[in-house]
Image 1 (cartoon, rainbow, N blue to C red):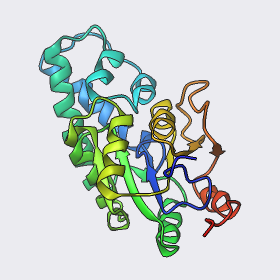
Image 2: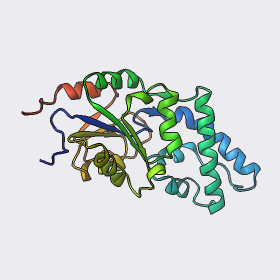
Image 3: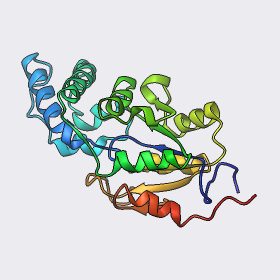
Image 4: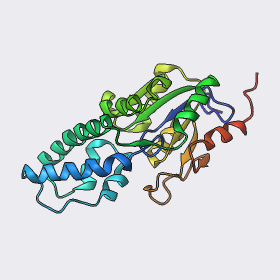
Length: 232
């Protein structure tokens, strides 16, 4: 068994952010509307705004790939401006109190910390957003590290998680997330993978390969209780 594959009780957990900890659609509904209104006003995108489901369905991708999926008919200038506007509007709306954690996230994370489990975030988002959501929602101090593709310029979540593991020296960990990129990041780094099946905007087969699947965040504690203690 790989030393990092914590089928026994882990010493660390690495979480995706959107669709895992944060109920992203509660924020993006407003951001999506504002973003495309501004692109239209600036003459950068003249087509009808794409459905928000297309944006939600692209979460988990690298930011450079999101706009190719959301508005493939948009120019590079429109994509670049969309990057700027999305981050700005996300942070503005978060500061207003828009956007919610999934039920039980704060309480479950607090209990995991109480049990001595080290907590981390690994996301393909931008650094300001990945660190801003936990801070604005009062859970930032629970995490030992928050890694983002935006901060480190990684080309995949596999590389991002590997970098996090190497930096913090986690000897056993679970990868917890809702996307195929999370499953790949866990599996290719020898981790036990917990798939989160409650976001509502994942694709069929997204969680194939997970070692376990939960349908509400607090089920993570139940799953933990069923794992054998590490052998001495």
